[in-house]
Image (tube, rainbow, N blue to C red):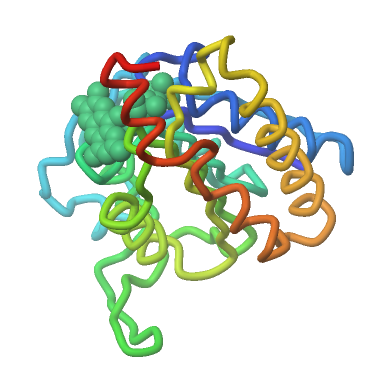
Length: 227
Ligand SMILES: Cc1cc2nc3c(=O)[nH]c(=O)nc-3n(C[C@H](O)[C@H](O)[C@H](O)COP(=O)(O)O)c2cc1C
């Protein structure tokens, strides 16, 4: 199974969220051997889309010759596109958003009705790809926080997609929090194993993974300098 991991954290391997992603991949790898290509998006030269729409008329050729060419090839070659990113301003960090604006060459200008909305018709075949999002954040609350990122992910990838959102993510980089983060990473590993085997994650397990690890007010108190 080929996985393209797009790490949207500017902290690269030191990312809080990458602790979750590594656990998930470990679980997947236990179930089925994986080939993982990791892209630290911050290190890539990705021009901003200028909205010229040339790519949608000319068969998918972007006017820019930058790292997006290779990334588009990697996207089309993968079985699972795994997005790992911290919540920034209720959405994805800007470099990752810039990358997704540049996947426009995979679409044509033609529109088609999908359920109760319209989407562009592909000019490349990406029907084989499944999409996974792992997103963490700094606040303890998930409600009134993750919704925009989740909704965007669902609209961008209407089929074959699953997502994990975990609040209080800075705890994963704090060794002193290991007594609560280690069990959570164990659950995420199990989720990865399930996902590799079935393409799905058990609902109860997902709910547990996405819940705060410690009480919201206790977390806020620690962040604010209390004990
Ligand atoms: C610019 C910026 C914007 C952020 N916006 C949010 C936010 O909207 N909600 C939230 O809960 N945390 C927010 N955070 C906190 C990060 O999501 C959090 O620190 C996360 O654990 C960082 O993950 P990383 O180490 O993988 O990059 C923001 C952090 C930064 C730097």
